[in-house]
Length: 98
Image 1 (tube, helix red, strand yellow):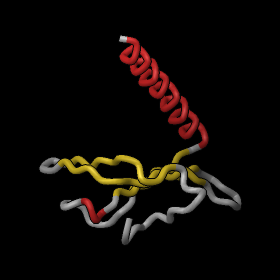
Image 2 (cartoon, rainbow, N blue to C red):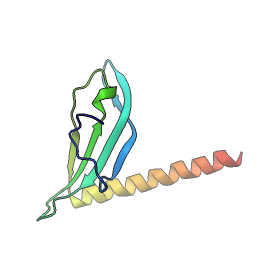
Image 3 (tube, helix red, strand yellow):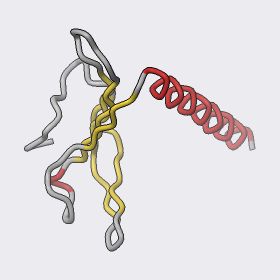
């Protein structure tokens, strides 16, 4: 991803995943980076950041989205992700058996 805003390194949570940007008059797909982090010193929130590769987008300038989550919100999100991951895995295993 050229001209990126988020730093991508060995500690990035997810890099080069499938991403999608949807607006009122557009729908585009691009490679993306997703990172969950907190400050090293005196953290007061969890950051969840997402950036799509702007070289693959026609409608959006280079930018990154960021959510600032409390520890409870981060845990709620993690639990929801786990629940949905299990649902997808179960559906895929059923489809694979047929």
